[in-house]
Image (cartoon, rainbow, N blue to C red; front, side):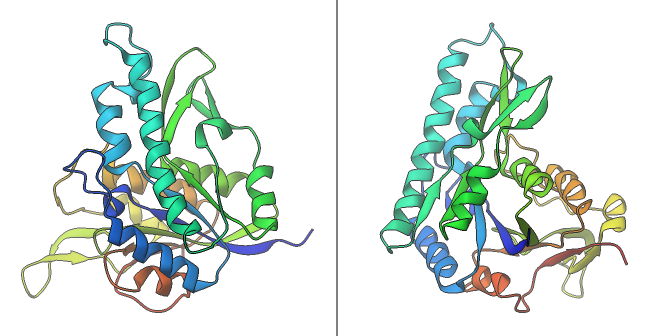
Length: 270
C-alpha cells in the first residue's frame, strides 16, 4: 500500500481566541487562517486547541485531575467543557463551509479513550477515509473518558502523537504548530537585548534548552514546557516540526508550502 504525504497543522487556542475573555473568538484571525489553508492546496489534518472555550472550564472543575467527588458539579463541568469545545469547533467548521471547502469535524472524545491513564485509539480509519475523500479532517482538544470511571483532558499535542503512532496510509511530512509567538525563545539575549529565538534545534538538543520565561496564560495542558515534552515523543517518528507565529501574515500558507519564514525548526538528529 502506497503512503501519501500530508501535514499536520495545530492551531493554538490562544491564536484563535482571546484567553483573557471566556468564549471569545478572534473572528478575523479565524478567517485569515481558513483562507490560508484553502489557498495552500495541500493535504493536511487540522487540530485546534481549547483557547478561551475549553481551558477556563477545565481549570474551574479540575478536569485534567480526574474524578473528584469533593468538587461541586464536576460531572456537569465535564460535559460543559466538552460542549464549549464543540461550540468553538463549530465556528471553525462553518468558516470553512462558508468558503465551500469540504471539512469534517471528528469528535476527539469519541475517537480516544483512556485505560489507567494510557490513551487508547479506537480507530484511525475514520480519519484516513476522510482524507481519501479529499475532505479536511478537523480534530480538537477535548475531554477524554477513562475506563476506570474517571476522565481527563486530551490536548491537541497528545492527539498529534497518536496520529504519528497510528496513521498507516498517510505519511506525516511535517508537523506545524501555529502559535502567537515566533517559536521557542531561549534565556539568552540578542544584540538588542531581547530574548533569542531558537531558529534551528536538533532533537538531541531539546533536553538542554534554557527557556526564556515569557509568562503564561491559563493553560491546563502544560504550556511551552509541556509542548516540548510532547514534541520529544513526536520526534521519535523522525518527523520535522515547525513552530510558527500564526499572527504573521501568510505564515501558515508559507509553512504549508515549505517556504522560508522566521520561526523555530526542530529537526531530527544530525
